[in-house]
Length: 259
Image 1 (cartoon, rainbow, N blue to C red):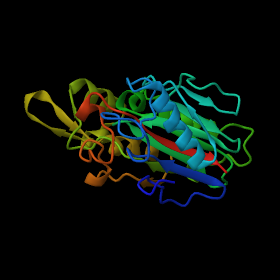
Image 2 (cartoon, helix red, strand yellow):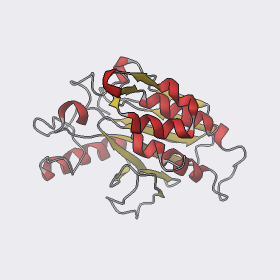
Image 3 (cartoon, rainbow, N blue to C red):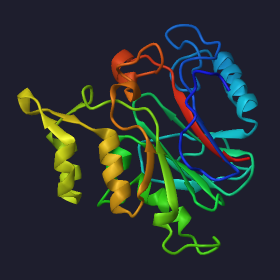
Image 4 (tube, rainbow, N blue to C red):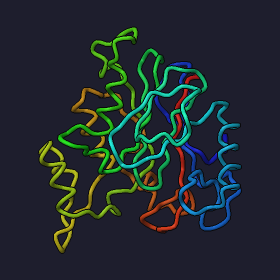
């Protein structure tokens, strides 16, 4: 692993492995320097392919890259799953198949259970997190853990361990009333995650919104991003890609797999 990449500090059981890449360790030229893993951002395809090969070799598993659309769909992965499958969440119980989420401000959420029998990942931008009628990408991913073919399912949410990766920080995430209203309509506790600004705008705490949603779903073992400045993609240009900061930007990847 590149020493700059983030290895989650969480009590995930064997054989669960996880990592979140940074800008470091690839071959792309500016403004995608250097480990851009997104095919859709204007980088040279050969450079992206080489960067993805670097990631695959480093983790010793096959990353499955989704076509992310800021939705709530979650899919189950196998070694036969096509690259570019349209979804914003995924899970697998297959060895050496890596659930992979690309980000450049949105929040990556990695999950496993205490048994280490299933791993999952979610692309939690505000749209996917809010979902429709309270059914967002986290709900869709957590449903994978309650499937009847798993060994131990009750109470499954209390046995799930989550890790939140880097994302846009509260000091940088300006949103309008529409974003605030969709969260507050579902859960009034989310009012605390919005700080008023002038002109009818708000500063939103994306990781805080995800923590509230996970807690409401029964997940209490939550690690990683605590909303502090080192986790903010916008505030750390030398380490993290950020679409909001740069507009033309590469993509990082958060991966979780069974070794």
